[in-house]
Image (cartoon, rainbow over all chains, first blue to last red; front, side):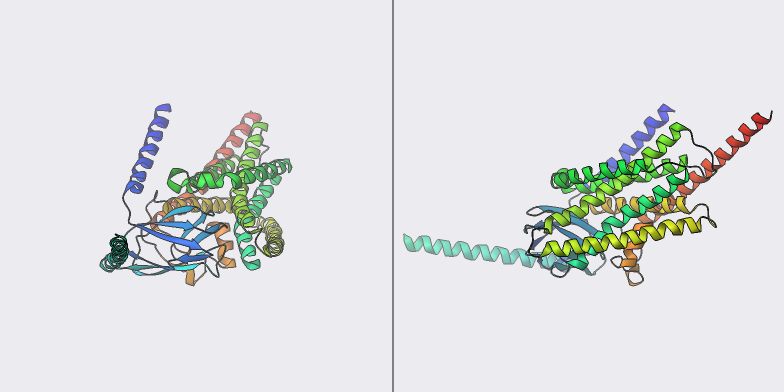
Length: 148
Length: 270
């Protein structure tokens, strides 16, 4: 009987070890911020049929609960802290989420788009960020040259 | 804020009222006095306050998944404690031994304490977070008062409804405890899917158009039998197997107790 229990325990450990491998996998990461009981950005595009990691930052001084019936998720985010949830894989569509403690103001949507357009959007965002930093650098360079 | 407080109170406090009524009614049937409930109540209040003050740290352990792990593990424990309780309270009425009565009391205390502590801490996070906001305290007090009224009404109705239905269906209390604890098991799977421990494959259906999960009816269904408007295949399979296992356990324990009684009475006759 004790051997049976040992085997059962081993199986349970192996089962959870196998399950935890899933969480080790690299998931595409997306971020959303909560400021003055509003989500920024209010719309997030994620690729279809892919599990993604959503990092939520609460910049407010009060707690908030990220909630979504469309996504079947709910999670408390403490003031000035971050929280992590995994969503998907989802078919293309719009999935609403809201702050359970401030449902009238804290609202947002996850837009699930076919993989290619999600990548394009990400590239566009990256390009914009890259251009902005380039412009800032060139301004700084001009200023340095001007001083010299 | 008032309506939001009422909704949040219903979500967090209704499970406490429901489990309390089911357990009080079940244990009363066995002639157990209410002392166990006062102990559970006191322990839960203390643990809720401790959890409220440590939740922030707990939530940030294990890569920000600590809260989910804690809640999911305790909900799973609740299911198994319910099974243990049901196996002890066999359907065939018989005087329980002192040891079994203690075990029954312990199971009831454990179930009440877990449900009360987890839900209580959840609601306290909301209350303490918004108490100092401008004009929020009045709305919070009014919301909690309304919520207590609604929950107490549902609890009283449930108590008398169970007593009424028991005339026609003897299994009503046990069935209610089973679906309630399976509901907790569903909450646990939901949390484990959320942190990517269990696979969250595509949703089987979306019955929000029929009964919205956030509506009053949806909240009631969620509390009583773990209603989920958007379940996954894994959740559905777990739900069915958990219910089947619990009912099978009741059947086996009642059959065993019947056969034991027959053997005892046969020996007494001899």
